[in-house]
Image (cartoon, rainbow, N blue to C red):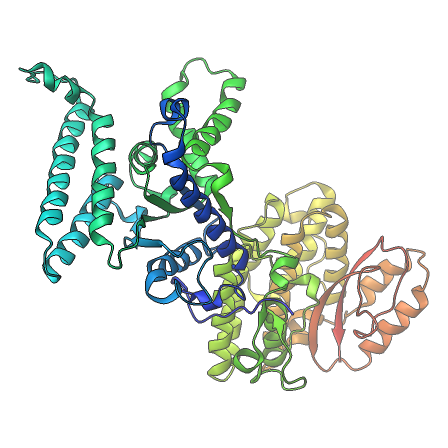
Length: 575
């Protein structure tokens, strides 16, 4: 049994309780986050036993940034914030329960609300936001409880020191230190603004955690949650440098989400502007920039502290199952209790309400994003719940086709799909057949077109020939199959005009003629099956994209088995 996938949090962050971690689709992500948190705690515990050379080399530097890496829509934010909330509630709910972590009996976490890096103003810094939230939580506690006068005064003093050093840091960052008054030798240390700010902030965090501890536990950690670190506005380099300069200190754990590829592209562009000459650029220098950017990212987000989100494309996505009672009860009563994946759910809904049955390999496109999978399930479930209206499903198919068309890489294929989007249904056969003809002749002149009213069988033969020419263009052929299937299905609705628009007296004769040119074992059986299928063309069920030799359910579909698996067919099945 696979992991259960739910679509109850659409276009927003899905929160999971600690009790759900083990059964979650992010179970390994949570496990990795816990192990890395243990690692950070162990590093903090060992600070007192360091050798002089370690102190000399690393000072108070801690590798404490846990990054959740993945593309958009893969659940990074949901996983990070669910884990962060577990840390936030650890002392209240989990420390003394069976869900507590061994060795964390004395550990507590002060978790600040998330920082959405994408929402920060261009001149705003991560340090600004962290300092403001530290003060807000401190002031709220100081005003809500009986003040411990001495420690409150001490923490306020530390805030004041950080404020002073931060002001000096900004002055130095904006330009040379002109007019700086240093009347006493003792003030020479003020020249080191960034180092002073780092040290004063570390001291502030230490006193802040002592004050915020509510149950006397000695091991307290400040947890910072930075979401979408790759989406910051303005200078992304300076934002990453703030993480490295000021937050990698004892007592702090940084949780961050980022799209590593986008982050690398941003920094590559930045370094390109800074390091390359616009006049004379060697190819080797361009190639080295991406590697340079990746190595810098590893300095801020260490590779051994990264958690990569699981991929849900292909077979991995098929392991995510939907609960029968929630999603399938209305549409699939034949096998109560069965759990199926998103692909099968989509196929069942389209078969039930649109009379379109897709062979699994002809699924429109592989959804690389978990968000896209959830959105698909949610949309179809809502349509089914409201009665499964045909027009709503047809509009949904049109939207999916537009998304799929953007993935077609071959220009000629993209042009045909765009032409069909704009064409009337009665012109589909003409454009498809004659597009193939023009490609054969390597000529773009439409006046060369020979077949002005091609039938359905001629379309099948044309697509077969196109597939021989472009064997790797899977997205193109699947989009074409869906596009035709949607139009065939619509043509079967009143007024029923499928004969006039698509079939035109030629269902399979053209494609059968093409088959007869080839000598294949089992060919008579193939032709007999096609003839049997055609005997009662009541309505079109589907276009089946069939890979012979790699189809477990060929006999169930009423199609013969051919050995070798070297040929591909596109067949229309009738019932």
